[in-house]
Length: 92
Image 1 (cartoon, rainbow, N blue to C red):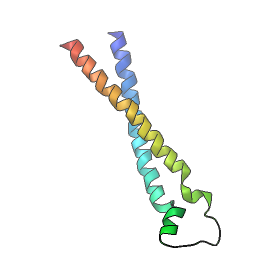
Image 2 (cartoon, rainbow, N blue to C red):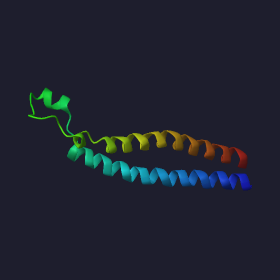
Image 3 (cartoon, rainbow, N blue to C red):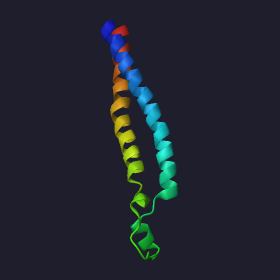
Image 4 (cartoon, one colour):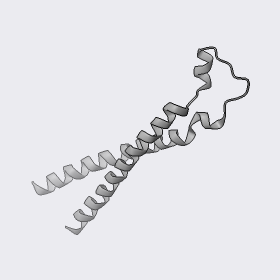
């Protein structure tokens, strides 16, 4: 019983982390929408700049947040499904 309670607590904390990362995703994607400038897109529209684009226009921190959140979801959601399946099997 104690093992089950511990596992449930860990998965619950991981899901709370996923919720926080979802909020971070929204904020990061909003920032990317406002700040991201791709040299590839500019060249497609035949727009040239007199100087190289500043580093912040690539929004590296925001893209890292989106990637981290995605990886966390890939790990946490299957773990939650497995836990629920295991608890159902254990109970039945």
